[in-house]
Image (cartoon, rainbow, N blue to C red; front, top):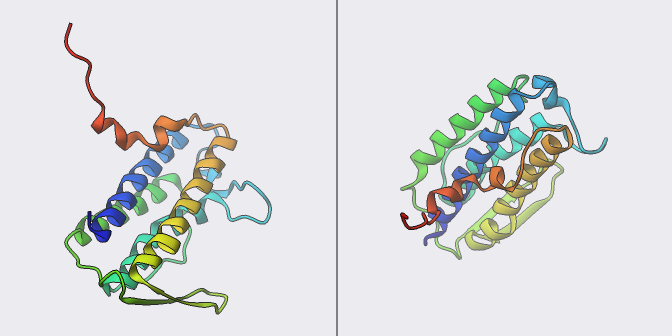
Length: 171
């Protein structure tokens, strides 16, 4: 499987999971207030975790495929708004499916807001930054929702796997 297909499919599958978690969160007694929930005082709230998870696919594509992308710096204030952000990100991902990446050894440079700059190659950028950062923010969102009492489980995390479920033979 090509790196771009692997990366974009992973983003799409797990953003679909995130959307499902937020659908369940909408039925929770706390509703939109969940967006302000944190796991710890020095961590970002749910709204920021969602924003970062939605920014990361575009940032990765900008880094490895030269796609023009501007990250958002605005957090959603409603669960409906967050779900719209996820849908918009998934639409971008669908449009990028045929976009070629640079070669695995093509240089990728990226900088963080704190001024640190990293020099990697496409393969190491995807493996060591793009996916781990995405998973970090995604899992933070999942943990915040679980800690707040939203009824989530492993099946919610990997719900996309059910399309591969082998059906038992008919009796």
